[in-house]
Amino acid sequence: MKKWIKKIILGCLIGFSINGFSQNEYSYKRKIEFQNTPLKWKSVTIPNELYDKTKSDLSDIRIFNFVGKDTIEVPFVISINDFNPNDPIKPKIINQTKTDSGFYFTLENTNQVSNISEIKLQFANENFDWKVDLQGSNNQNKWFTILEDYRILAIKNPQTDYRFENLSFQNTKYKYYRIFVKTQDEPVLKSAFLNFLFTIPDFKTHKITDFSVESDKKDKITIVEFSTKTKLPVELINIKVDEKGNFYRRFNIEYLVDSIQTEKGWKKNYQHLLSGQLNSHGASFDIIDQPPSPKMSNQIVAQSYRITIENQDNAPLNIQSIELQSLIHSIYFEATQTSDYFVFYGNKDSKAPKYDLENFYDKITNEPKSEATLSNEILIPKKGEIKSKPLFESNYWLWGIMILIIVILGYFSFKMLSKNNNPSSE
Image 1: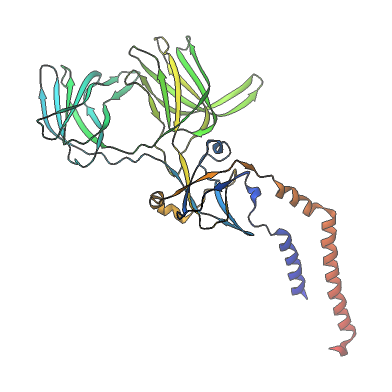
Image 2 (image 1 turned 135 degrees about the vertical axis):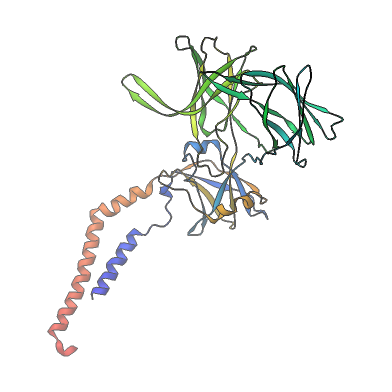
């Protein structure tokens, strides 16, 4: 008897508690729309608007496939069109000569198969400002000009320690590179490295809003504030300065974490992002916070920024504009069914999924794929919470369960009493 009672009660409880995949764990969903093609692998570009609703590392994103009454979680990888640098080449310094106009250094490329787009130099000298010419050759007889009057410099004093010694140029493929340093001071070349040409993907440029520039004469600083329409992961900030003269300024970039309302108004809470030097070398100022990672573990997602520039005793710079860029994030998954696929997101309690596909990231990114798109965002109402609450708090349900249990207990009790009163029936 006891076994039957336990089974019935347990069955009742299970019947009320079964809840498979619950959409209510997430706040938003979008349908994945794609054409049925022989290519099983699909690529979905994450729209800008999604970053406002998901966790900064995108760990709450899931893909579900609905096949009839079944809900299947679909493994995926999040790809970022990242930089693909290679190990630098250490060339041989085969010749160093001096002329009345300056000093020559000739480097031999020991791996001529690779394209070269940068030469990293390191001089032992301090506090210099030199102009450099760069030439390339395959036989040391005929030389081709790559750079002319390229500026390198080093500044070291109690306030700062800054060096700019890298030569950047379009990809080349020469066996020899000759560097001519136009100075009467003898440059001491400690080391040189040739960098491979690496693949730089297209950046997505975002529109800036709420752009403002204010200079504080008392504190001798300039504050630049700007925002974007939504929160975005940012890898590059380009500060455009309209200034013809030479300048060298320290700067600090912060991003807005949150705002707190106080008695004196709203107090903005900023967090440090990047510090550096803003100088007149080159035509633009590209500031990359950190190399992007497909894992997205250190991704900073923000909407509002503040740049503080130290002017010291100089006139404020004319900050013309700010250009903010990010790389394109994509979701790769394999569509094995013709039924509906959805992307779910907006779950603060979720952790990053662990799929076997992570171990095949390089292979998956090289698989041929067909493009898929996402529908407009669909808000998922929290119906599960509303229904489940009255289910167990309603008096009708409670009385119904109690009556059912009493009837079952009464039935078996009556049956036992009948057996005890009629022993001959056994």
